[in-house]
Figure 1: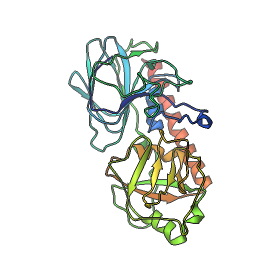
Figure 2 (figure 1 turned 60 degrees about the vertical axis):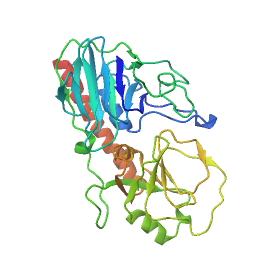
Figure 3 (figure 1 turned 120 degrees about the vertical axis):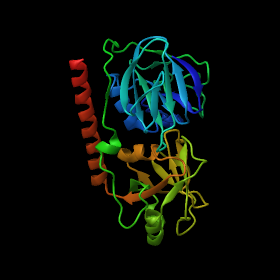
Figure 4 (figure 1 turned 30 degrees about the vertical axis):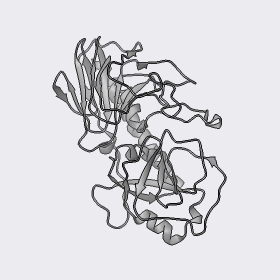
Length: 327
């Protein structure tokens, strides 16, 4: 496949570079791991198959061979030679056909998965692009016009049948918060983090009751939030310590930062909360300028949310297996 044009911030990713944080190597991988996993499931790919993550649109690609693809993530507008298809859909593209992914109406990131996965070299056990360090993926960078990518062997595109799956926003119940919240606000569940108690009761209540806006200086390292200031009751001086995606740090200016998949491996800002793993996809699908509300939950609720997500994935897996059995 050849890149005809890209809005920027299109990278090759896979499930992530695990087990190397102690050496200062970040995870990378997808912002919306759930959407990426579903895309690979739709193609019967292995779970670590590489794909394209698209953050800025449009993206146009020309294919040189018949290939089954799946597009997941946001409600991205997918076209093949001008023919439109719904989001979360799988089709077979033919040699010479052009795929266009146009900006989604609701914002968020999209994923283009191809049968067999994108063929780029493994670096430290992963094909993900680490933009900060400049390695992995395709030449350690975002894709540019003229780049050519190949796919690894996968399920043959013998059948031209098309199909789609129910997206998580319809298959998983959205969390709710007490009191009033804007209808367009994304509710994200969090667990108390190490310095939760360092923030007074009134500050914690304000953190949970506020609508936080995702600011334009957000990126794959972290979502920077705008809103009322929150600060610990007393100044904290912390040694740098390990952090993971989902941690919400509070710098001295009082505006929280939600760490993302390209987050550094250590930091010294106090941590007020951590987004539960089952809700990280909700962050990825909230557009710049969108609003967030946080709901504090316990570990039991976090584990239940994870179980519900696994049930959703199992449903997709069964449906895809049935489709290919009947094809």
